Length: 540
Picture (cartoon, rainbow, N blue to C red):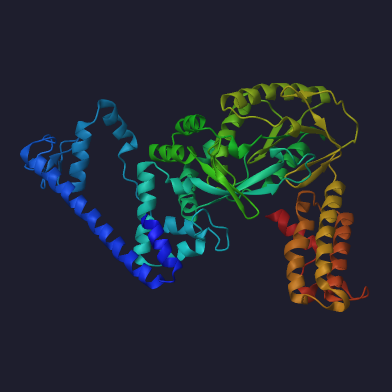
């Protein structure tokens, strides 16, 4: 009835009067609420005073406002209030809790400002923000203020001390990306989800990554290259090439891709692995919290989905996830090493694992593969790692160019034999030559160059020469030159092939004629000859 009364007045045009009367009624309603609350608590306190319904809570109870010094575990006298409370609570604990205290459960972790600042500054200002929308630049501005820096340090230290990762840091926005060259894009496996995580949480992850470096050498082994300082993926390829060259020119290249590497790390196995490596207790507890109950909202276009719990604790887009997965993969490769098979080289970059098996003959190599497979199977089962069947590939590499047998099973599946195999961006061909890799790199470079020519415009109108030259150096030339140093040994034919292509592109940018001297052409844009660049890359 009251609603209809206000509606009638509103329709009559008495809106100002309606608004005023409604504000008065809201004020009276709030006053009534406060009055009822006060009456309730007065009645409650009266019952407490009389020892009524809540007699177990007495107002004259001896609640301590001051506590004398407390004897600690070792008999020392503790005087600080914070330490007194800790010792009192510990004294009430069970025996197993007291034993856990010695393992770090009560450890107060201290972080250095320089350590946190370095982790924070690794976050790019232009990187996409997480759920709360705060970018790296905002957090860096906060760090520049004294109280803001204290808050950031407090959160980092308390998170490490408690072994707890806040819910906000475990939630992410999933951005969907299509995987290239898939036959059926109606399958979920044809897409990749990159999680946009909270910048503050990623800073905390990088702090943990820095502290886990202490166990990196033992936990990852010498076979893993990606995600480690000073160990690039090209070095992994070069290592496989050297393993092949040290043989007698005959080898078998085997490639496998770990299925859902980032989504394949379980909490139980991760705890087992870190405990076996002797990782500090507080880090183990923090990693366990990091892996549990992760959620993601998938964003497609401008449409946002519902919260979905992830099946695994590691995600793409996380700073810590690659290292955790590599610790698990390191356990798998340990089992391979235990077999002690000579002539087996391994190169792994996160979830891409490649083997080069060399021997005196085809039969000798096949026997080594079988022995190696025993350790590999044992490691995959022990650490519960799956292998993507459609990604098992193989290729015989023979300097003589002879054809080899194609009947070989690996991990219970028929190997997909290839005439050329791409290993971490570098193409291999059957005789170990460079022609296949260079042809593919030039093909990719031509594609980038085609986009550049669209920027030039007709009649020279379009983007300026300086901008085009930067694009050429950073995009086109780097695409074309990637991985060439693996094959470089001063080959004249290889140098001429690459230099002719570079000269043609530079002439297109500058508008120069074919008769322009090459030295003057390169000097104009600040480029060196191809052979000098390759020599420097090989030295590195």
